[in-house]
Figure 1 (cartoon, one colour):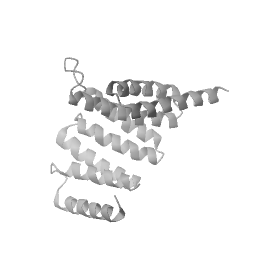
Figure 2 (cartoon, one colour):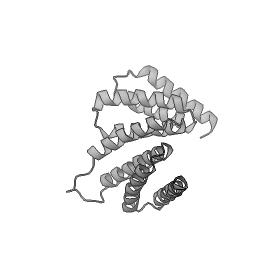
Figure 3 (cartoon, helix red, strand yellow):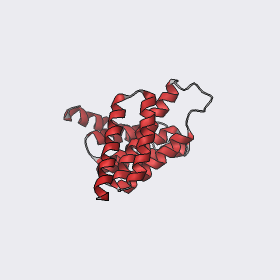
Figure 4 (spheres, one colour):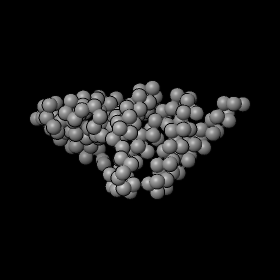
Length: 182
């Protein structure tokens, strides 16, 4: 997206927010679209502000455990990582993970339904960001466990690019642990 497209998108989202009240069902999705646009522009702080607005509206409309909140927390965690607010990123990722796990597919469902695959994909993404936050917080053993769980999910998804990224993170953890023990 070029700068003109970003400016137009931002203008339309700003107009939408002047029309829609915070209690309107579309308020949260508009705020999250705004947060996503701001992340694409590298405006991490403002992105977090709009993620927080989206979270507040979504919680009041959908309840604290709705799966949509996990997506919102994940987006906020990504911005917090970029701002090097690793403690906050860990908290956001853990909130997302808590929601994802509470909304997981039941064991009686088919393991390869689209809902099950989407759930695994979201959980894998949340675990990846959580693992990155833990690395930055120098909690390498915890990060290793998180990435191992993410690798299991990526393997179940047969997503080789995720598997490669996660394997790289696990290798980096091993190197850091070796360096720290010397």
